[in-house]
Each structure stands twice: as C-alpha cells, then as structure tokens.
Length: 325
Ligand SMILES: [Zn+2]
Image (cartoon, rainbow, N blue to C red; front, side, top):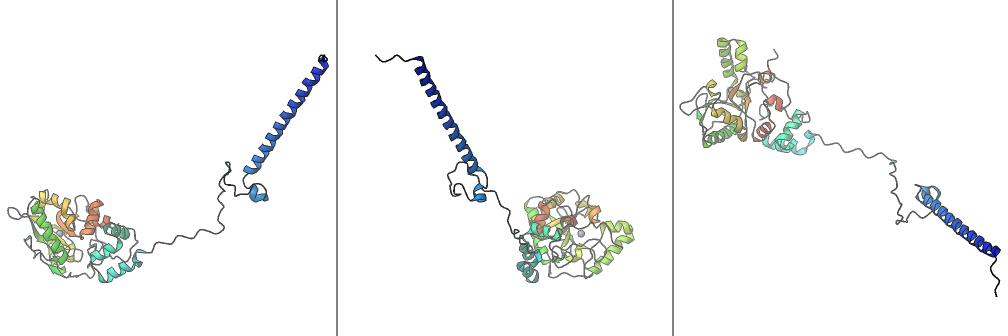
C-alpha cells in the first residue's frame, strides 16, 4: 500500500506548482518587455539611419512604418520663369506693324484681355492717343495728335438716311452703322438717321465758337468739344436721330425706344453710347444718347459685358471733366 501522501508532500507539490507558475509569468513578462523594447526601437523615427542597426529600411510590410519626413532641399527651388511682357510677344509686334485693329486685339487675347492689359499698364505699346486706332481716347484731357488729324479711308453709310453733314465715317465704322441701322428696323423699333458724323478740325472751330457765342463758354463745353478734342474728328463717332415720321432732333431723341435700343444693342455692332446720363463728372459732357462711338466689335462687347459707363473707366484713365487750361 503506497504511503498516504503526507501533508508535507502535498505542500511540496503545491510549492513546485507555484514556482512553475511564477517562472512562466516571469517568462511572459520578459517576452513582453523584449517585444516592447524591440517595437520601440523599430518605430523610433530615424533609428535605422542614425545607427545603421535594426531592420533594414527595405521592410515595407511593417505596419508601423511611417513616411520619412520631408527633408529641406539643400538647393533653393528654381525661380519661376517670369511671364513674357505683353509687348514682347512677336505676334503682337507683327500685328501692330502689319495688322488691323482686330488683329492687335486678337494677338493680346481678345477684348477683355486687351482692356485688362491696357488698364493695368501691362501693355505700354498700345497707344490710347493714336487716332488711327479704334481704341483712341479723345476727351478734354487728350487732344488729337496732330490737332488737325484727318482719318482715312472714309466711306458713307449706304443703308441709313443722312440728314446732315455728309455722313462720312471711317470705312469700318460706316459699314458697321449700316448693319446697326438695318437691325433696329428689323427689330421693329424704328428708323435711324445720321445727323452728324466726321467733322474736320476747321468745322469744329466754327461749331464750337458758335456754341460759345450763343450759350457762353461753360455751357458750350458741356455740349461741344473744343477743336482737336472732338471724337467726330476721328471718323469713329456719329450722332443719330429718330426718322420715322420725319427726322427728330438730338434732344428729341432722349427717352425714345430708339435710344433704349441703342443702349441695349449698339455694342453688338461695335458701338457704345459714349456720353451716358450721370457721367458728366467723368466725361465732361452732358447726356448725349444720340452720340455713338465705334470701338469695334471686340472692345464694344468687353465694354458692354463689363458694365462700363465711360471709355475712361473702361481703360482705367483719369476722369476728364474739364480742360487742363
Ligand atoms: Zn456727337
């Protein structure tokens, strides 16, 4: 009969189990500590680069791999290439030398781009005082140069009644006026007539002096340009009247359906109403709904679409309410 286990033997077994359990726990703790230290060393940024130890940096499957931080470049970034100056563009240079006004505007990128380049000062090769161009600005601060400038070629419109003054205009403006006159009839609004178009310098001398004699100089300056300062001398301006039951006057044109149609539609044919109501502080002239100025279709569309009220505002020029002297 095997000896009955004594209490001391049982105690020794229990003690052995406790020791085994402690060893296992210690082993587990050691494994966990080693694993933790290893993980820390592997994930510490830059450890591989710093000491050359650890897992090779090529281990792409590491779930804790982080992208290497961006290192500042040792050499400065290349300076962005500056935009070539507008006026250095060979296409623009060629258009200015050999092309039409439309060619020049197209070379800059169209009416909006042209306006922006001029108004911002980025296109000094565009001369707003060049009376041979559709973009010329003639006002109380900008006289024509030469003072007796005479535009060529000129033509008379053929599709609109000429009430007085011969109706001569620069040829492209005359052709555009024919289209405009046909369109206002086609729209059922009424018929226009021409009541003044090209006016030479000598004619303007007499006209202006007549206004001064009858109204005094201050009133004359609100209504009529001094010689050398009139848009009519460029061949790009025309005064129109309503001609449905006989032809009306300039002042009678105010408030007509014809005048409103011009506000809404003249731009489609390259014209703008140059002296709007409420713009005397900028233009120096009272409201003249009959005075159309030819800018060409590209610039007139940009003027209309941009909501401009004056040519001075369109090109970013100072107001010209009065003469320098
Ligand atoms: Zn006029």
